[in-house]
Image (tube, helix red, strand yellow):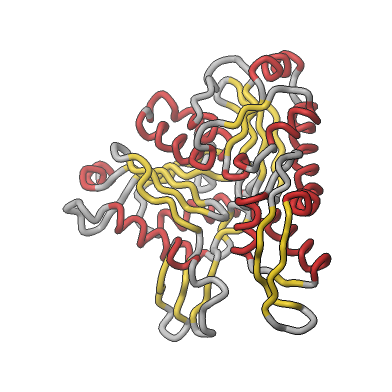
Length: 345
């Protein structure tokens, strides 16, 4: 009875708590929040100074009493208290134009494939303690498949590869369930570290995370492309002074290729574990790439070359998961079969 009462004054929300970004979908309104998964905390009074992109701008630039925290690691919660505070602020922001004093939304949350029961319960608990009245969990590749409108309810093999900031997950989905899967704790943030490590070894210069991200976005590629160049600044490890260097596309590709090969091997292993009938479907329909990592130039070409199956990058790949949670909210009764069992049952 209380749940129905609170439901009259609260909105249904979809959440994608990613390693790099947190995205929020509100039923009837669409995507309303798309911010970095970063929180700035003032250690003197234990108050949140900023969240999202505003906190990201402070990274590497804050004084000692301002701690910049990334509360999610590989798609799971690493800092329970900060995540709860962040979600409370998000819920309040979403309900700012309503008459409710205490928002109690129903939440559909995306969760990684290989989470433990403890990690699953931790996510449910933090969302409930932040103010949700109900929590429903859907696996990230399933949400992404729904978001790009793959026919997962049919007896057809759908292979989707979700490439996030901290996770790369491949899953073959048929009849609303996962037939075979592979989850790797590596993604866009590891590629940034690869670039930082390469520049440190080759040039003796230390780059910041945001500079590495800029390099990856502007000239990063997985397949032979134009050999573009970019000037970046870092700290000379010998002199300890600022230094500008020129990095080219071929060097960036050399830096990230070992990680890309591991991801491709993961896709290969997923296909190997798939029944032959579904493999034939995948060969005809192709491999679908989603997630922010799918935007890396030439990634579709190198996967297609190595695996010999057509590869398609979906439209707006970085929002596939959150769009999927939104479609579930909009058609709840027909799509509720995709939810996984709660750790609280």
